[in-house]
Amino acid sequence: MTNNTPQLAHGDEYIVFYQGGPYDGQNDTRISTDGTWDTELTVLAAVDGHETQQVYTVVKAVEVGDKVQVTYSWDAPESDALEDPNERGEL
Image (cartoon, rainbow, N blue to C red; front, side, top):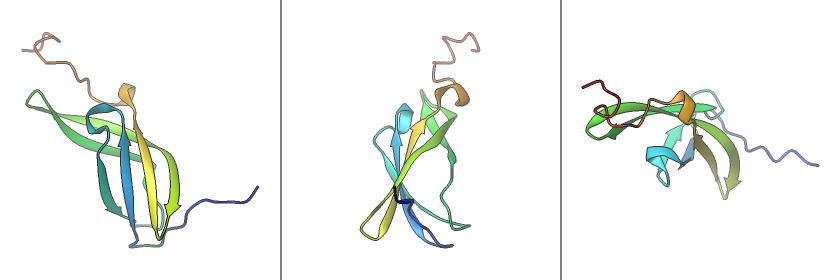
């Protein structure tokens, strides 16, 4: 089996695809600061008017044409709860 791991250099752009959670189906472009892609991303998402931190972890990376595409999956246990604060008894 050959090594098909995509390669990035410092300053290269890569495309991020989100699976699951509040960012499901969205994409983003990021820049590599060290010649690799992030293994984990923490993003802010507005849920019912409140900001929550949502964690996404890398699932796979592929090279398509001259771009690297990295897919991240929502890590619900590591993310802030998505329930309405009223339902959690906090308000």
